[in-house]
Length: 116
Image 1 (cartoon, rainbow, N blue to C red):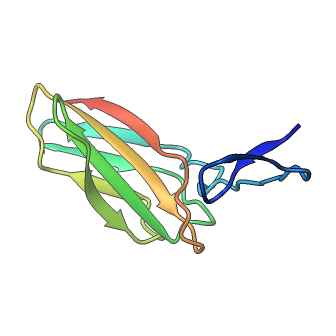
Image 2: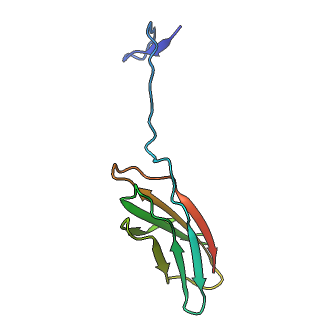
Image 3: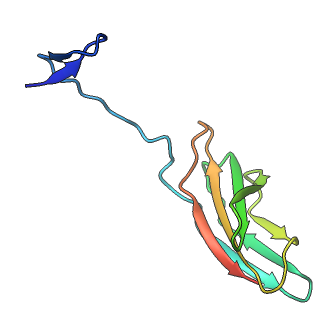
């Protein structure tokens, strides 16, 4: 037996089962080839990744140790590398990157931790 609730909040019998398909609002693939390079002499961290064919926009989030993740950069789909010069020696930074498709769907996030 299938039961449901009416607008009056009372339980009622439903003769027809209802099937619902829920589509994920997230694209299936994530950014691939995410790597980093640190240059302690010049004081920067460089992130790079492979361009994704469905990317309309890249979003990169950043968090230093014990800090909340915040949106750091938004980049055009042609850009596949970024340099961070706002860093301090002896810290670890977490970077998370995802892309947004033409349909406005976000990809799965990809994270990397960099000790500087």
